[in-house]
Length: 316
Image (cartoon, rainbow, N blue to C red; front, side, top):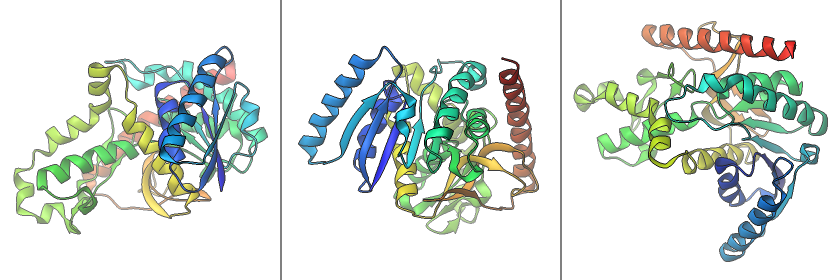
């Protein structure tokens, strides 16, 4: 059984994530961490969640703190704290302000929870994953971000709808930045185990429109309801479950890439990775030529932004 800590638990995503995480059979304790001054909200969340757990019949223990040092003893730490993105705002505009928060939290996590797996949710998630990795001092497999995991699930759902099949029959990936330069891997997409381009219906599939719907998915939800909550919350829980269940699933997360994909590396970016109780391990893959070009451009964009943010943090 394991303890999971959620930093940023008073935010929309952080607070909701505690609900699906509590359903994971390997989790027996959840720590909600919020900033000083949010004690009343944290206590309210604890009481409300305890009521929902009682109604559901869940025995998960729930506690809260405003001191990040209390993450000690956690096997998984979820970092969801940070300024929220607004509609029409590029995720990279958030980088420096959120990097300060992530760096401070990461240093404390590195001191208090050396064996933990740190899952970064804060946007821009690829840059923030690099900041967290640098400031925790943990090995690269222990620190990873939500990346394009949810984006891949969004594309998977659209393909399933188009082919009128169950989502479990579709396997697809979006790699690269969790943002405007993300790259769909149509070459690695299958329906019912058959490569999608081998299916006659693929010729009439509006792939460009489907991909644009995914790329704008978060912004569209924000424009309609103010924030994304349920999709990210469930995606976070799926990562926690995969880690604690030691499932060895291949998921598309933001991980530090050395040279596993066409010798592109030196950056935290969305790539297929094996996820288990030890953390994440990027999987070497070969892409079509156009996909390599797009992925390289995405990696260059994120690498440059990461270098700028890390340099600015060192100045402060």
